[in-house]
Length: 144
Image (cartoon, rainbow, N blue to C red; front, side, top):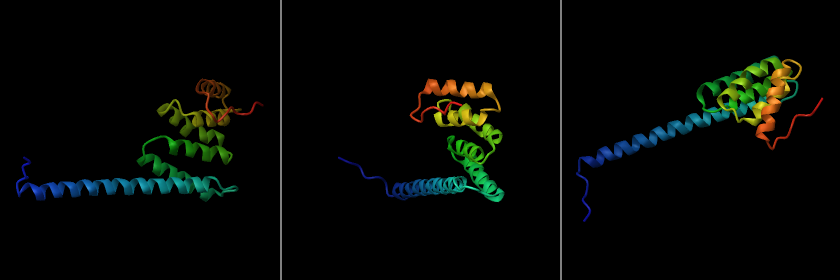
């Protein structure tokens, strides 16, 4: 035979359930906000001929995402932004931070190999060696 909860316990259970649902909604709202920021940064980063203000805005968006969202996606995106807009030296710091946090990140290693080519040949060779170990589906960077 099932026992019914005491009458005083029902409002407490409802309150706890409501608080749990509210916490879940707040967490989802934050995730959506950071995903939108990251998407805006990617949209800006993919534009050709982006001016200085657009680059700065995209970088700020990635930095804000990085400060609040878990993972290395924002670091890789920030490095990619710098690399594809002609700033390979500036790309290395976020990319190296990404592989420190996630050593198996093949995309970050591939971008490091591209960014360090001609700047730091030892780092480029290390990135190529790491790519060989990971054997990513992305393929190898073109030989010079």
